[in-house]
Image (cartoon, rainbow, N blue to C red; front, side, top):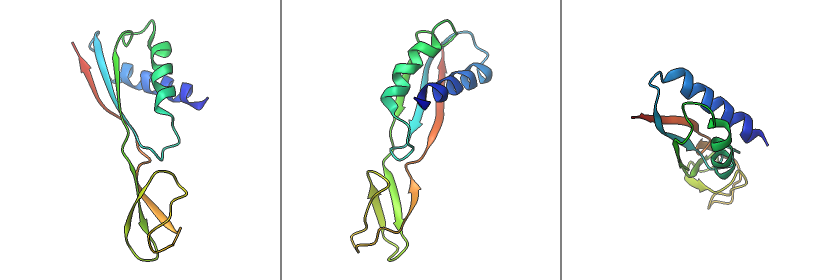
Length: 109
């Protein structure tokens, strides 16, 4: 489960960036095409944060939809996964959104 390693990196980055001792919440953006399972991050967050200044902090995750641009006709296509098809029939899509994995904000008390 690579989400454990990702969660450890998120916790480390927040603890390094925020010196205030009480962190109340972390806001993440995990795109639907990122290959990261948000529920696994939520599960791992509590385990990894335990014993740190993030213990008890709320984790909010936003999951932006995937979008692609058709290389054949130029149309923008919503993508639920990387195996999407344009209405013109082409599967040659360039992903333009949905692969994000970012810490958007951190709240402190």
